[in-house]
Length: 240
Image 1 (spheres, helix red, strand yellow):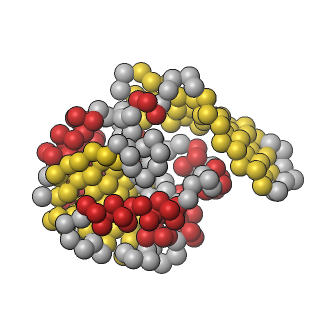
Image 2 (spheres, rainbow, N blue to C red; image 1 turned 45 degrees about the vertical axis):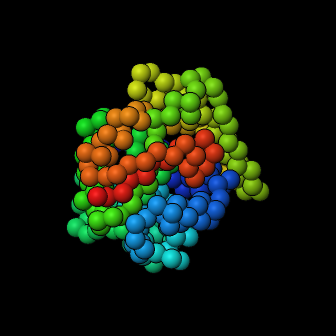
């Protein structure tokens, strides 16, 4: 998994670009899904690819939370956003925290940054090894080709007094891979505007094969067409 600009050098702009997201509402939805599908009362949550930690900030009111991310830049922000939560740097394919959790979440298509199916299978085994028996796994997948429409642009604008940010996304799909190009213009008060191109490459793992791999990793798996956000599916696994 390679680190992109928005997850690294430009990570300080990440929360501004995604300021339209209601993390509190998403955390409540997550909790409702956890309660609905859990076989026991969960007490601990591990967020893999936790980003800037805003889901955990709200979930920590009811659970003992830990966050893991490959990006030290994102974790630096997460520690400020969600004080008192344990954050660790790790690649999900090498995850080895030497402890188990009742819930693992991996959201926002982060699983798609795995380069190949072998890494997906290894990661799912890692998730299983970090879950208690009867624990629950929630994954927002990246295989939905309807989400990546080749050539169709989308735009996000952050417009505040001291900073203006425009991001145009254009995706291209080829076989089982989506290439997402982000064109960013960042203008801050007292500074010249800057332009960046941030390329993201995601694997579109097929639903049938992903569910099979989850079963092989020791999960009873389930697929939901409507997850946390409109247009985003959700995979649920219960550790046998």
